[in-house]
Image 1 (cartoon, rainbow, N blue to C red):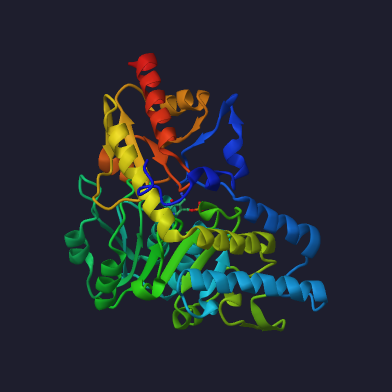
Image 2 (cartoon, rainbow, N blue to C red; image 1 turned 120 degrees about the horizontal axis):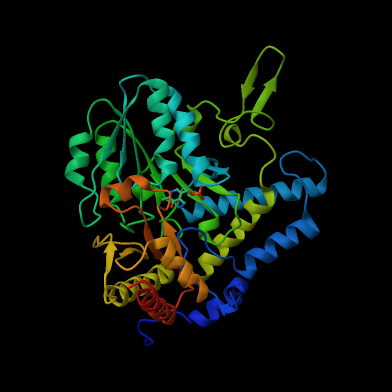
Length: 410
Ligand code: PMP
């Protein structure tokens, strides 16, 4: 790769991530499962270590110095998150355990305002976390669940979407980027259309926030969900962004300590957002680590990362496209750095087992998105998903690994 296409020194970046020098099965790790989770830079690991070994206390409870300082650090992470998403008011940022909990929060809290006959729109490319909660609401409340079709190229049908929108649509909940197809959806247009039908819109940003700059003001979405562990932060922390007036109109979801104003034996009054939705002792270490991950991403530069990941996607599409009997599933013109494929020679589980022997960590399965598997008529796919710390040489190594799979099974 020449200087023009290499916007930063990837070897220097890799040195920030201790896991990338790990060995697997005695081989250097080639980690291509970034859509599942990402590795952590030293800056995050060190931030969590420092908090836990030098600054640790519970947040929003202790009125002693340590507790107050921990609370400040926790709230600083909220402010960083709001700035990162261009959300404005940090009270619009709720810390959850991950995208799954963020999506469930909307389903079980905002969902309480729905009644039988109201309609919710999702798409055929959603993760189970953005499918199952709505099916449960459908079964409990009698709301109607409508599904936007996906074309053979993996593109969301905007005509199909337009046809589904109507006066009964209350909520549209779609992914910004598919974890299987890689398809990047036209979120701004999806939001505009939802709003013009009078519906609210929830965006699943799990595969998009870590890879492209997100501006919730520009999108004008009502909610956005994503996970910290896919953006170089620890597990156990995620975010739900919600417009404040909508959050303020919603009832609590999980209840207990720290989300109340007053409790008597007769009744409880609830705190304002975000506290209303953050019951229990929060994951302070993880949230503070998440703040450090945002600092790290900002220091590298999201636009640079995104541009580099696109070069990996282009390279990978070209190289893997040349492997005999390999069919890429998801050929949208606008994609995140995810390549799912079906290899004629072997089932994805066998493919990833052989790759694992070579040190390549990659996922084969349904990727928690069975409806999209059904749509493309495959039981599973093998998926390579890239991060800005991957190299084109790793893609070459993957292609060699696939040749070995073909030799063994072909
Ligand atoms: N949505 C999408 C598009 C995802 O890819 C994932 C994780 N694979 C999730 C939601 C759920 O994220 P988590 O498991 O971190 O809650």
